[in-house]
Length: 440
Image (cartoon, rainbow, N blue to C red; front, side, top):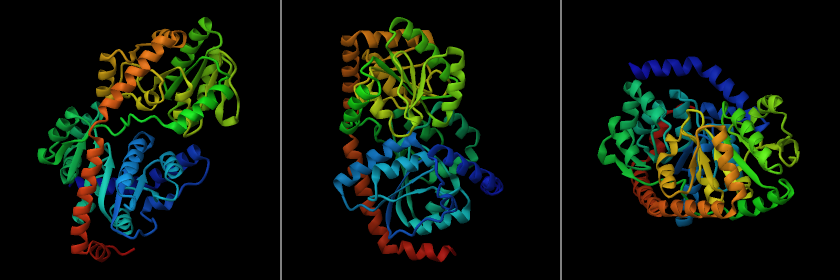
């Protein structure tokens, strides 16, 4: 009953949802999106393929780490990536070039999912973190496609949602062949939702690369001199609505003590730049926008309303606040900043990255703040005390590097799993069975 109701709802809302996704994609990327892929109309792939799905920018870094790790060990592995958001697709295409096809995931309707699977012809499907589309997982399971979650996690908010709709999500979760969870807490949550404990493994957190990006570091040096003028600078990364005002307030406080200090405010959604500009009418801080090619004044704000530059700005900065943590959203990725040698600060809402935060706080490698005043004080400490700044950055990088142990073995495990499944798929004639089920 739940499956039928879900299919009906997804069918009814599909015109509105796809229209909204297309408009959102145009706003974010500035160009038309490949919206027909939402119907499953992707180019046919010479299968069997190794399919990796990263919903949005938050999961994309994990997916890219996984792609690179897999290709290091098996360069000819036929990987195809999908995303759900337009910004993630655009960044994936930039990072992977022509080596790996990137497409949109179809809207979760039966006929569209079937068309997508028939054209993709995956032997293995890897979902990064947790994005459960019941129809997609059910169809893949019925067609013999082995599905797994890598870097699996269930946040506090997601756990409540899955529990409320367990008759819908429970069967989908139970159809997954493997779940490699980030840690024991997330593994227990998957099991509590009905997943067979024998299918749950610990795989670590693939965001914890422990390898700084040399390219970002080089770009950071250029940004430091040419855009930030060599002035002290702090970065507010992945800031969400409700935090923007707090960042402006903190910068007002910082610049009264350190007049040359610049704040780089990177909203999670670049289209929020105009709202930030409007909010700044209260504070009247000198404000520049990166998308317009403007350069910030000393003591001012640079709104980073572009995609793909945040890591390089972390490399250029002296301190970083990680957004989504002063509003109840669980916090965003703090690893990018740490890898570039930028000590981090977060608010009290950090359930999405709790394990990493606990380790870093215990090692005195990061600070947790409660409000804009505390944020400003922590920023000033890091901007004015180079020894403390370097100590925190070094301790944080050490923690992250240690946490990466075991990820190479996960890549090797995935490759072994792929080889076994590919051989079995070749014997059973996966492509022919799919074509019998789908009329395109």
